[in-house]
Image (cartoon, rainbow, N blue to C red):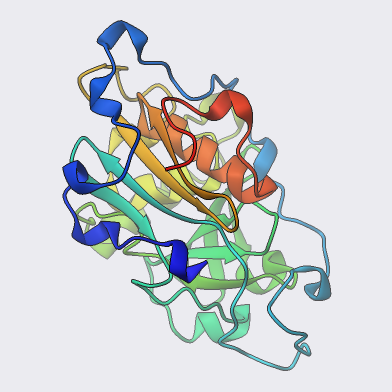
Length: 262
């Protein structure tokens, strides 16, 4: 996969090999996918550690770092890079939950990953406690218990926005504990955790007005099938589509907008 990646985090968007999304007329721009709000991808998987598809078999006593096969991305709002997950530009290794807890501090964003699953994001509070959106509820749990064999990493810098101070991150997270279903305005754990850290309303469902003038471009790097470019009108829609790709490893036909292979 590494040879297929272009170093797009170091380029202006105008330099990227896309399908010329700027050539779309305003009335031709379509959102990649329409969603009904749900937390369907927020099931913390019950698979055992041996089902998580790490590059080689590891016993439960091994702490990492490990490598896991993942789809890689960069995302842009207009010409600004707002999200990057490229192995050639950052360390994507993962660690056992026990090791991860020794590396993080309150307010850190943590991502639990495994192949063919949408990643689960949590906010580290203290000790082994994390706050997260799970099954339609904002709750506090033990990372050691919810990891269930999945490994994780710190993802504070995955989004390129200015973070809030740690005490405000924790205030955002703990202030929503106990909210359920219709009281929640986030559609997945990533959007909730990122909102807590950055405080941007774009992470909320319906928090951003759809505008043809402000477009989001997602470049998806799929092993063996090249680089795909998708266009969205909101950050929240883009996050949901990316998480669907993570869960399935494929791009569905209806999700492609003004793109295909580069």
